[in-house]
Length: 508
Ligand code: MSP
Image (cartoon, rainbow, N blue to C red):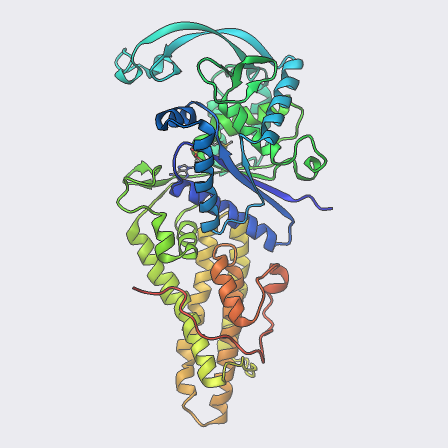
């Protein structure tokens, strides 16, 4: 059996409600996985929730409820968002699940048995108010900022994972790999980060300070550091310890944000796997941030418009289109309502929506809804076929390289060319003529437009699965499963009766 393309996203923190950043990442991952499927690959797509750690415990304490209770509620919010956004994940992993706790324990025990984890004294500045260790660099003008309250130097016994031992191996691995990290400029940042000597990683927290975590299997007085716990989700969800593990691991792609590339995903994670004798993931894609007035967007409130409210107002496909069209994967993008409205009106309303409604209307009025046979093959028709072939080649190439904004641009250039073809052929004028030559031209024009629209609609499927399904239904087609067979210019709808015209992107 062919190994499934295994794709994961970051697992979101269970310490607040979902926002645009979370939504974007899941949509990006979903578009990638749908693209893989359409290219004929078996796939497995996992996302989930990161539930342990101090912030989660503090949040629950504030509400006067148990951390698990708070996590259950937040998990439901995040899961609802996945449904709303039409995300096609196969699994949802929560780090409080027994399957995950078992895997974390077993990996830790194995590393401990083989001397990769050791106990040592840790000396440092500790803020009781913030409940965290501080470093010299946290001082402002030589003083600890007010927010930390009393800061004292304490010595604590903890467990450490031997990161430093693997530093040279990791640098060599990164330098030799071409595409482990995408975009490639981020790899240089990681290598830059590794120029400084790595400290071993403190992977324990004393239970009296933090109870909400996975106990260390070899010392019940401690829980596991939340990043060690969270990263392991990727192997848990692949079925570590079970038969199916070899069918899924290594992961083909981890999709994450740039803030969690180094050190967690590009340093801790490869070393954790190497030390555990497990293969490394094939690739990490680090996307950029959605910004608003120069700041990272990270709340669902406080912004003038909550971007997620646009999903309800304008529909999920318009939202998915916007985020994929506006962001160059890997770079930051500014969120603006004006840009959203402009894309909605222009690309979606005027170009795609208008094409769909005028074409179904004309076919119903001039041909009783039956797709006519194409009889001519003049320059007009040849040109539009050439446009399609060019759009297909470029769009698929861009999609495979995660350049979805450019891929969509190509598809919309093609969509606009279909409208232009209609404007040049003027089927509404041809329909008024009695000349048999004009009847032929009319039939050809409608047939060519139907075929062109069918092909455009198959190409937008990963980004706008809802629009894709709706229009395919009007064509009498099932949802497209494979681009290889679907993206052939072959007039397969000839003689078929179409459904009734619809308005895809209503104006208010
Ligand atoms: N829990 C960790 C990830 C553990 S993965 C083993 C975490 N959670 S998070 O909720 O803070 O972020 C989840 C993802 O959302 C991250 O990949 C992060 O980069 C992404 N985003 C959060 N805000 C974002 C934007 N404003 N824009 C785009 N994505 C950003 O980190």
